[in-house]
Image 1 (cartoon, rainbow, N blue to C red):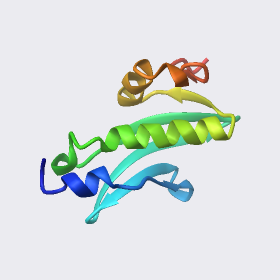
Image 2: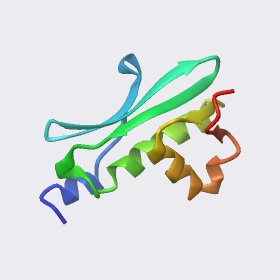
Image 3: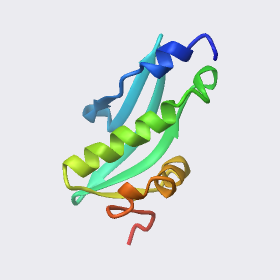
Length: 103
């Protein structure tokens, strides 16, 4: 594990609605899953994790938090971000309300 391993494992995802993103802040290094919202649809557009924090599961935590938020709020998710698409492919519990098509 890297120097951030334990902090990454215990990291908490914050929904920053004003900036339209889910985020994890570890020592000032921000990991984010950005989105836009329109017509009861959550468009998950981009996931970014700083290089020193990669491979610590932060992207997975962000995707999980965003999808749970969508489920709890009865939203349709459009997964534009390839990371989120891959996450959903491995988690069938989300596939009923997630699509990769904008139509």
